[in-house]
Amino acid sequence: MTTQSAETTATTTRTLDPNVQPASVRPSWTAAQKLALLAAYEAFPHGSAERGAFLRRNGLYTSHMSKWRRVRDQGALAGLGPQARGPKPAPQDPLVAENARLQGELARVQARLTQAEAGIDIQKKGAQLLGSLPLSATLVAP
Image (cartoon, rainbow, N blue to C red; front, top):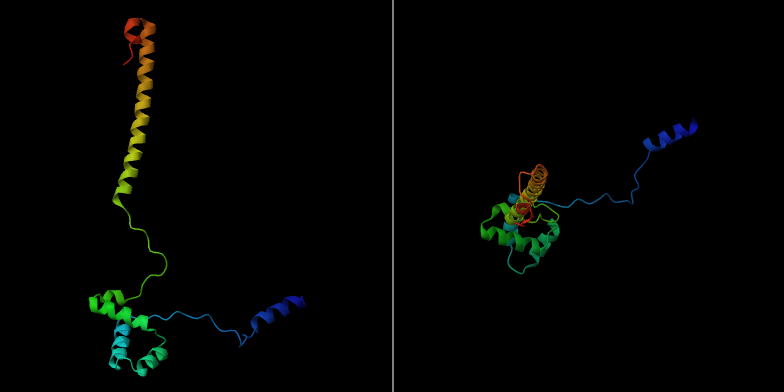
């Protein structure tokens, strides 16, 4: 019973190790923040050290600025919003869906045809047994 209480107190009074850093969180900015950062960056003279200091202070790279500038110049402010990470879904080709639908329909029609042919063969054999069809008419291949 003492081990159980020792485990309980160990988990409740556990202290965090000061040497372990918490998991970092990827920074994200809204479209308005991106435009404001871009405007502040472009306010500095081209090639000045102040631009580099601004980028370091805000945790940005010149690639951020060039991408945001390109999107802004294209007039696509929606492109400045947050982007979904990971692989992009492949665009659906309408011909692939149509092909799959037609192949399924073909398989169903072929199954019905096979079933109908089997029924016709049974009817022919029954007619031969009853003698309603002459033997020469049933031996002719279609």
